[in-house]
Length: 616
Image 1 (spheres, rainbow, N blue to C red):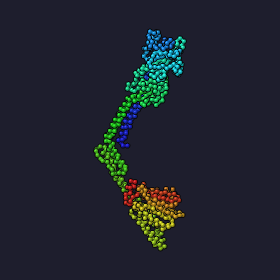
Image 2: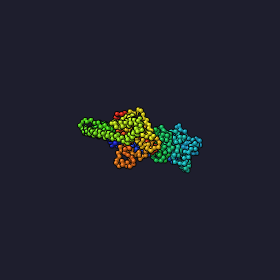
Image 3: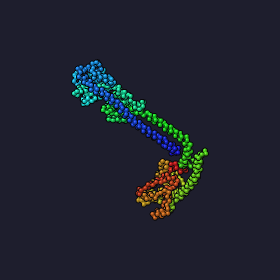
Image 4: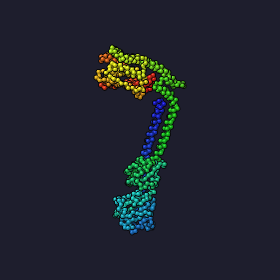
């Protein structure tokens, strides 16, 4: 990473990213704080609504208590004609003082909608006594009401008022969204059960309670409703969800239990905060539903502003990096690029010197240094090339005397035996071998190398006619390739001298050649005695024996002359000429023969194979 990117990364890592992380932490803390504080505020509001609702119920309880205490309901139930006890239709003069006071109380109370009595002692039309009339309302017959579970519950309460919410018992209270009080009426003298009072109150007072209460900002989307413990919506001031199942609007399973609970969830497809407060002494819960979008609007606006500021800071950093840091890091980057070109081997590269600042001095120093390095490199390269050439000449000059002596001795034997044709052929082949060995050229064609190898093998066949056979299989298209002279013959010689020594069968040497991925592969395979791992370990590249090692070889019967242009000499010559990517590879095991592969670059005679090997 260059200096410009480092500075830019430092600006991001030390300023922009910490600011972004800090902003995100503040955002989420504020998010959670809003939910927590709003839940607390909602709890107070729901408790206030609960108190207002309880006050309405207590007020109505006091009204009906007054009616029982003044025997108004007792007189209505025990009258000769119960059907004429409706206080709304009776003449003021026909009522006694208790009835007049109670009717005044009823008229003055703003919430009462309807009131009637079930008469335990009445028959027929006298079973239901209307106290406060209501149009278009049909009262549930007494015999049906008596068979309901609600009747049994009212009897068990023994005079304590029982309140019914809208939609809980529509067969008794009707379909309007009104609350109904139902209680047992006793005769005060003997505490005898004489009837059941049913009083309905208007719902507008409850609606005013919900309507006048707002939580937080007036722009917040908040709605309230009353839900019973079974999850049915009893009262929705907006009249949209009355009588429906509350659970069908939210995926969260809600249990309406004692106390207060608040959580964030989806309600009617919108993310909202649901707050639930269970009313004391009643099987109902007040529910507040607040849209999270309207509640978190300010936080969202803050987050957008924060992201905008961060983006502007990032944009300013980019502009600063482009227009100002480039002036500082541009020159350094240029020098670094030229240094990398030098690393890749281009020693001729130079930095343009312009300006008069410190970067110009740095460029001038770089150019001076490269001039010195280039001169030293050229001198070392020339000396190394001369050294390699000298080593190769020494290696090529190591012609085995014993081979020459043995060949001349064989020629002498043939001459004594008057084998003139064979003598002539052997002399011709020996002359060809010597001609290639002593000529100044280091490189010949593969065809010439194969001819040299055939001459050598034919001479050895004259000497050891029944010891081995040979086969040469090299593609014709490869014969024009360049190769170091005396590459194949020493490898084949190694197979004949060491591979077939002491075998009880006829040996065979096979020489093959092919091209593989731009390389020339030459393989020499024999079916001789093979080699042990210890013998394989003796073949090491570019290793010179010390005097002590030479003495050890003498003790083990390994004469230095037998090495000659052997396997290791060929390997060293290939490494010196072509580089470390090339050489020979030996595969052998005792009794299984030996395979030697020689890998060199494929090139035509006279081509710049050294450069080709570097590129490869």
